Image: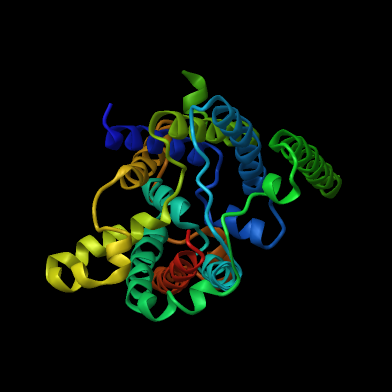
Length: 180
Length: 132
């Protein structure tokens, strides 16, 4: 099947599940940023836990390849802080702004999608002046936790599962305490 | 089926299914779920309508070509999938201002859209700086 059709099918399922999981809502996103509502954190952590097991299995089997982004401290940290500031103002991330537009939330389109297009255009304008300086500060290349620790990736996966299941359990407990 | 008409699922169920969507993407296309590069390609395509030579000479658009690719179609799919999911229960209406915003800043939709627009610019600038 064509790559484009596969992308479309992938996206339709992704958008469907994001909507059913209530991730496409400003109130849920701001609720998480304000540490008041952990619905989206639960959804994201579960997706990562399930995703990582399958994908590392495929890599072991030779059915797929990891796609690591380089660790560049300057670009990652400053870019992340700027991203967070904009996220708090917009109340959607790029994917959820698209999904929220499909759900009929007009602020996600008139604000989010248009603003993000302009932001991408501005970045393209300034990219030449950043790419050989700022975007290279603290460049450590393509790192992964198993490679850094020098252990088998399944040990790291088991540890991440243990830590995250504990976090989710505590969050659920905490919520019921507040309710009572 | 009832499950599709239910307007909300547990975030654990939806999250696990999204994890499986990431399996599907890797197995079928060797791709990872992502969105923000599509905004670069799309603004490049829009700018190309007006100043094609300029766009063709810009390093960032040489790096991220203004074209429709797997991720572009995935982003289109997110829009369609969310549209279908929101309408299956049959009671959804378009919304102009989110409830939490309205409670704090009032019902003025242009005020909300203006802040969202600025937020979108800042967010995407940061996302591209950190490489997605």
